[in-house]
Image (cartoon, rainbow over all chains, first blue to last red; front, side):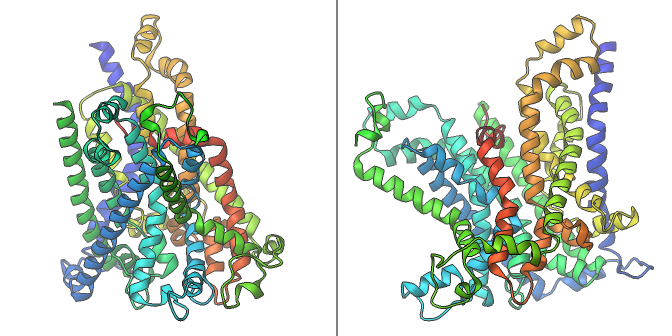
Length: 294
Length: 290
């Protein structure tokens, strides 16, 4: 009894510094965001409570458009990451010479400082002199230069492509690890029965990887929803707000226009969506664990 | 064909020639997507500006040179300082994360008291909120503490968001250390702290090193939003922000910007090359259930 009591004190003592740090840097700001969202905090010294006024002010057509756009942006980005990541994992799992080298070569977009990778995309999208526009013109696919970041529709997809580019390596490596955890004898048994490569993929790989696919899509969904650097560096939410997602919108309100109260209200809406994703994630993973044990 | 299989290659791993062609085509397309910005960026850094700003587009540099790599030290005056700052910020952030995460992971791996599961879930939930969402209170907190425009304004919030994945990784590693070691140490009369210090830590060292590397890479690659918002002093700027100012100018000197980017990513690329064996294992450990 005495032993386990001292063990308990020791365990919590080990946890205390980390808990304290996260309380101060993450939990308290989270609570503070909620409090500020009911105030008119700004650069002025005095701050008054204004009730629901900030929320009443932000819920208009523009904000709803931003929410809708954020979901569309996130959806396509996550979908493309999953598809390309799965293709990459299948290819890198093939027993061909050089695959170890190829696996290393997938890592740079993930490991390299994010902002620097985005600068490079900034050049690639350059209309007059950039590579993509240049090659498209060379091959006669477009008539004149295409300035990808200058038009809403192309800028929207350009930022998605860059986000996918940064996200794919992690998804690929994760899927590859999950693929290698599938017992080899399953494939051998199916192969003996004459199942084709495609059938083996459809009937063995995909079903057994579904927990990994679901987990990764949820994690990727949360990370993508929070994406800031790519859009900020490439377009700052422009042209005329066509790439403004909720994070960019909050940043512009809070840090750009110094309207802390209103910015906090926008951040609270993001937090609500994130909490919903978070709850969904915990529920799904718990169910996955339950079915695996059964 | 012979080069693609030996007699001991399992039948299931043997491919027909067109399958091999398809696989390699697929791999090359995949890698082209992932690496083309680097290839293009490197070629741009070799091209003289006159060739860069000319139509039609040319892929290969004509009379390419490494001139941009020497000129950039003059055009970006703080360049060496930015790289130093990036390293300093990442190193201190990594140290803070390790100091907090090593004891915490051990507690999560070895002890199971009421409430600890909830605390673990709370830690993991931290990674769901990006710094961008909490920026306003963090800004006010940094201002109150007088940390705005110091290194700490970038280190302290940055470290908090590196904690969840570090805990997850190290906890998974420490769970593989047999509990019998603890029992044996207790039998010999060792205290809890002594056991942790002298028995567990030495065994966990390889795992701690992997976590340190992964955390450092994370800290090095994600220096943007806090540095953009909480610091306006040029002498403290990390590389991405230093170059961002350069990137935002009306006339971007692209070849030098790309040269600077390559010098900036070199440390990361060297790390990947030397540590890839640990990295792939480390980054995915705990990701897949054993």
